[in-house]
Structure formats: structure tokens, C-alpha cells
Image 1: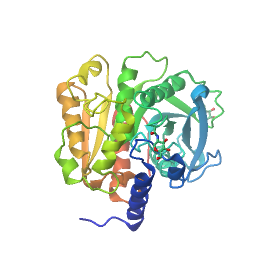
Image 2 (image 1 turned 60 degrees about the vertical axis):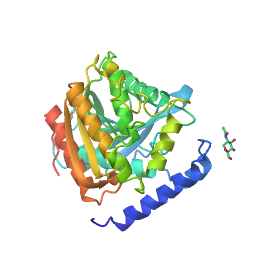
Image 3 (image 1 turned 120 degrees about the vertical axis):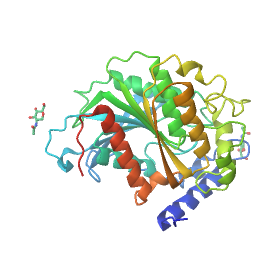
Length: 339
Ligand SMILES: *[C@@H]1O[C@H](CO)[C@@H](O)[C@H](O)[C@H]1NC(C)=O
Ligand SMILES: *[C@@H]1O[C@H](CO)[C@@H](O)[C@H](O)[C@H]1NC(C)=O
């Protein structure tokens, strides 16, 4: 196996340790302890690495906000008049339990997506479990879309306009699960302007009571081990539910009821060959394509472990950007991105 870069190994053990010590056996989180391991960046309209950021409150009653990432036009590599940017609505990972839109790792990732894909990224700060269990994170994720749909995109005071009629939902890990469930909700809703053109699910967090081969094979993997994954589900699901709940086990007996009734956009599904969730991802692919008849592009990176995308130096991280770029272009055709 190819050696992981030093920085990634440090990050892996740092996060596993943080997750281990801040998760309690009574399914609560020591938020103070975790905060020591989860450095935050503040938003800044002055561009950093070619991207300016703004925090936008979309539901003051629940203190919900998103971080908007806009590539600065001065750093544009083409001479086109970039006015209306397509939008990626991003849901961060962390087992529904950890991280936020201003966490260093996710600020970095979304900044990179905005800069390299030349899109606006809306990173949603949904509420976390176990304080807020299923379906609250899905509702928050969906409310962000409703807000974007009604937002005054001309008078918002941002240097570029967002084109919400070219919107993609994306997320990694728990965020990939969120993208799926938010898309199902969105499929049954009439938006005024917003149109979801595609979904990008990066190593999405699905599961079930049965044990699949990849879970057994990578049960001790540092970024996401089996004990952690089981704990996250326990924290996320309504009390008393097991992992055959349709939020987790979408491909179970009742999982397809809703999706069969709605329009579901084309999905780019990214899986890792060394990720504990790999076989669940394949089940998701087969279910979505064969049972639900939806369009899915499956891409597997054979050497990728869970969470590879937080380290830009990895070859698979560059591949991810390229595959996302190809997918977005295939769908919206027009947008021009050149390096
Ligand atoms: C869980 O354990 C922590 C620390 O032992 C304790 O402070 C907290 O009250 C417990 N919460 C519940 C709901 O049992
Ligand atoms: C870009 O487009 C806007 C609106 O269509 C226009 O007002 C502006 O002059 C254009 N800028 C350039 C550099 O072409």
C-alpha cells in the first residue's frame, strides 16, 4: 500500500483521538473537549487563497447559518465575464455529530472547491446529533435550499451573483447521506428559481444491521472505524431505532417509497476501495440505478481510505476535483473552467 503523507497520518490520528475522547458511552458528546480539536476559521470578505467568504444566517430562530464561498474575479484564469456562478450546496461530514461549516478542514475543502471548480459553495451549518437527532439535520439542510430559493440574489451585497437554477447538492460521509435525503425532500417541493441539477455523494454514510465485507475488512481504519460508525448511528437515529431505519438503510424495504415518487437528479457517486463504507456505497449504487431507475455515475478510487479529500496533496484529491468538474460540465455544459 502506498504510504499516506505524514500530514494525513497526523490528521487521522488526531481526529480519531479527538472523536474517541469526546464521545461518551451514554451517547452524549463532550463538546468542550471536542472544540479543542476542531479549530475554526472566521469568514472574510477579503479573499484568502482566491476565495472570499460570508456567513449568512438563514434561520435566526434556530441560529442556522451557512458559509458562502465565492471565488474572487481577480483570480479568474479566463477573461470571461463571470457573473452568475453555479452553486454547490455542501453538507460537511463528521458522522452527523462533529464539525461545522467553519471548521478548518471544511473551510479548506469548500474554499478549494469554489476556487478550482469556479462555483459558489454554500456550506450548510446544520444542527448536530445527538443534541438534534434525525430528521432535524435533514430539515435544516432542506431549509437552506428554501432560503436560497427566496434570497434576493441581486441585492445580497455579494460581489458575484449566484445562479440557483444551476444548483448541485454535495457532501462527504454523513454529508453524502444528507445530500440524498435533502434531494428526496426537494424532489417533492416546488421551488421558484432553484433547480437541483445533480448530486455529488462522496463516500456517503449509509448502513444497516447486517455487516458488509468492507466493514469487517476495514473495521479498524483510523478515520472511520466500525465502533465509531455504530456510535454515530446511535447518536443520530431517534431513540430505540436500529440501523435498518430508512435514514441509514435507504435500500431497505421502505427506503424506496419516497424516492420513487419524486424526480431525483443525476448522481455522481465517489467511493474508496479502502473505505469501511465502500460496500454500502455499492449497494446504494445498485439500488439507485437498478431498483429506482435513477441515473448514477460511479467512480471508485481503489486506494482511497475514508476522508482522503481533506488532504489536497493526495492524488485522489486532485482526481476528485477533476471528476467533479467533468460531472458539473457534463450537466450544465456552458460553464468554462480552465487551469
Ligand atoms: C452522560 O455522562 C456525562 C459524563 O459522565 C454526564 O455528565 C451526563 O449527565 C450524562 N448524560 C446522560 C443523558 O446520561
Ligand atoms: C460583466 O457583465 C456585467 C453585467 O452583464 C456588465 O455590467 C459588465 O460591464 C461586464 N464586465 C465586463 C468586464 O465585461
